[in-house]
Image (cartoon, rainbow, N blue to C red; front, side, top):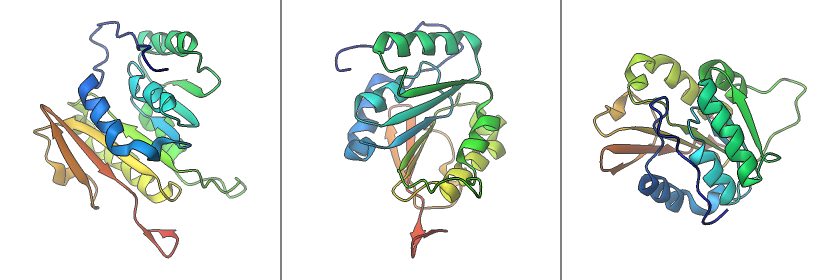
Length: 191
C-alpha cells in the first residue's frame, strides 16, 4: 500500500498517531510485524492497523466505538483493498478487547501466531480509565502467543510507573511516549 494514504477526516472524535511517530514505531518493530495478527483497540482512523497490514501483518482487528469513525474505517478498508484482511468491530474496546485478549476457550485450537496489540486511546483515558486499560494490558501479557508485542501510546507526561509491571521499553517523540513490552516467557509458559 506504499504511497497510498489513510484519509484523516479532521474531526475531533479521533486523534491519529502522528505520521512521524508511526514511522518511528514501525521502524522499531520492523520485521516482527510480518505474519503477525494485529489488534488495534482504539482504532480511530485505523492508520496503525492499515500500516501494519501494509508492512506484512497477516490480519488485523480494529475496534472503534464512534459510529462516524467506524464508517471512515470501513471506507478506507475498501479503498485500500484490505477488507479480507481486516475485521472492523464497532463497539467498546474494553468489552470487546477483554474477550479478544483473554484466555482462549478450552476447545479452541492453539494460537501460536504472534500478536501485536496497539493501545492508543485518547490520552485523558490513561487517567479516567486507568484500571480497565491496565486490565487490557495484563490480559494481553497473560494470554498472547510467544513473540507477541504490546504497544501503549501516552503523552510524554504520563507516569510510566502506572503501567503494569514489566520490562517496558519507553521512547519519547515530542509530546508522545511509546511504551513497548514483550510478555515474558519462562520455560514456554507466560508469567
